[in-house]
Image (cartoon, rainbow, N blue to C red):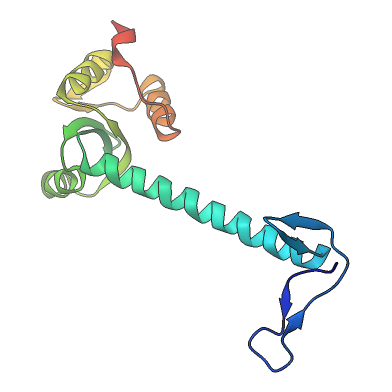
Length: 154
């Protein structure tokens, strides 16, 4: 029994590889060379699926009710709430110049208010906060998949 991979596909010389089989997958047999190619293909396919899922999740968070963290050029960080983060950032940019979206997470106005309370001693003005270790650590955690449960702080 030989490798089931087709070599010279689409040409007059199309044929099965027939090298010694090393791996079987879903009823197909592969030699070492073609197994490595298939493995690479599947790894890339999985990476692409994960990246697309992450992108879709991020887009969902930006489009749904979200708590967002943006930073302006002077370093101040705004903690805000919006149903449409992209539109909100565009609107804020008109008054505050270029803004950098640091992260978002799903949430509603109550979570935004609790975040404001949690970082109140770092408040600069309104919803703008001075960057500090505690706030930056919180943002780092949110960027890496942590969804805050604000009730634990009260």
